[in-house]
Image (cartoon, rainbow, N blue to C red):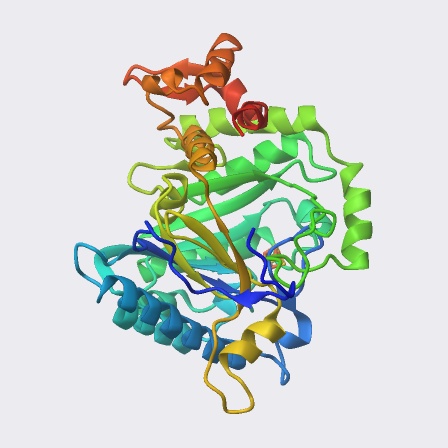
Length: 425
Ligand code: SF4
């Protein structure tokens, strides 16, 4: 990690040598109506997100400035968008936070700016993350008219009690209404996010959530085990860190919630989901993701395929094929750098960057590929850095050769993927 000499976070805008131009763009929108106690995303909530003192308009001005500065850097390095050296973007992803809290005209303006400065290919996938609450989900028709093609809906559970446990504000009916409105608006693809291993959940409640989700006929499902990490202990909440400190209340909630989790139950939930989703016509294509044909997330696939992407917004990560760069998480520093109150020129926000070494890249590429149903070619067995672990995983039944000549994690391998991955780094 390259820290500037004084230990302060520094603006990061250089393109590393050997870099390639991005094919995707991630925009981080940090606002949520309230802060769920398990959430480690970069989020500001409460008065900053809603009401007379909200900071959404100041943030959008800052984000527009960052997009211009990042586009300027790409123009200088690669020339204008739409050339062999600088392809038009294939994907744009507005994640958060709750991007659907942005006024629709702000979403439309941001996407127009992205189109004019970065270039967006015909048929590009443009995803917006949405929370299902009636006062959070926005107007699906206007969202589609702004240029969004895909909604990713943060359902998390379809059990009212579990939603209360998680501190969520919406009901299962809100999820159904959000899907209905998305379909009525003609949005091309609808994804639901669900969490398993929620304290108090049972295999039966999880089966009921899956059945209710499938009855809504989504195109894509992301299923994540509830993880209760401690970003403060991991040292990633400092001035240049990409996370915000955990509040005392959230820390207490997590300590209590951990006691209600169970690894065996989590594994049984994953196996049950894999069976039910396969029976309903969904294919797994990444450890946590299943899709109907034609509905894989192209944006996330670009991450797993190690392609380059640009990013803007607090805590957002970018990768140019050679270097990882991220903006610091704090909104104050972000807005102050990009829209200085003293009339000085906008500066890129504080953040850090980290070059990826050749050996690190080999291990990381293998891990990302193994996360997916594409896996690795058998020739990976001949690579000195990979072969011993892959051979061990084959013998342990965690990896298998497929009919189309790839090495792919088995179901047991997906459940124990971290055992494989730690041996590769
Ligand atoms: S709504 Fe989503 S992003 Fe916002 S705090 Fe809850 S989990 Fe985090």
